[in-house]
Image 1 (cartoon, helix red, strand yellow):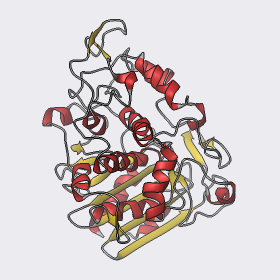
Image 2 (cartoon, rainbow, N blue to C red):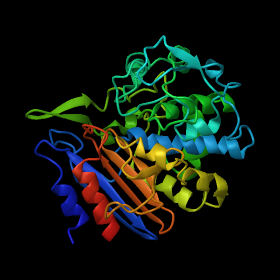
Image 3 (cartoon, helix red, strand yellow):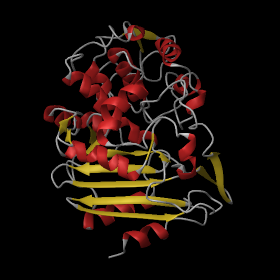
Image 4 (cartoon, rainbow, N blue to C red):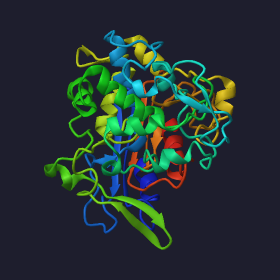
Length: 381
């Protein structure tokens, strides 16, 4: 079988990602490889503790934060979100997904905490990004590839969201991404702490995730990778280490704003595998972990979401493999991929964890070949 080192080496350089860090863990056996460089020029070798923009690998972390508030008794899954998010107290919904923005009806029922966690609140991305109710998500809310310094602060962002009609009725359909950003605002308002502070106190510090946050301190910029996009003839720098993640942004994105390392995300995954416990301390209840890692979609909702989901369901903050449709597809596997070239999963039934971090932007929602090769390697390891 091809070694992990060889697999990574064959997928870096020559217009592909400059480097990569991969971690495969099964029980106490942990394999980690770092290959290539942190920059396209090849001047900084990739390291095990290199820091990456993890994009949508932020989503499971923020979902865990919501569930901590559920465990605290501050909110409940069936609670309407309006007391904390009054901007969503009386949302309108376009009459049909293709209707113009002014052809709306009232929401049939309130949006609940569970709606946000399952991505069925009515806001988000369907298969067609050109629909009238989807376009403002890009233009007004800055959804899409992360640009943290360009997004408005939470109160202003929520005010803009309140002026955009929902695409579907609450509970009706799975729509991607936006609900995680709303979850981040919910956590801050319910807890009374800014999202970065809450995550640091309740998740990062207890788990020793010292390199995870919404910005990279100046002292650690030498470990921060560049972020690139493939263009004709090579790579284009999207963000340098001293760029948009060098300061805490106005809007800490619960959908994709975190930076992290392979070992930090592994620490988060181990906590979930231990049913919410770490270092003799319980961060989440076993029931909350079970809710996070269980598919909540109907077969019809899964079937409508093939642009993002490939035979998977959705838990809280990540996908859940429902059936083995590929050699790497393990029923019950929980995790997700990030548009900056990242992927992380865990398998509760086996205790396996896989983390792959690159710095090359994905060209679309379909995972690239290197991720699939990595998952197949991990499945056979």
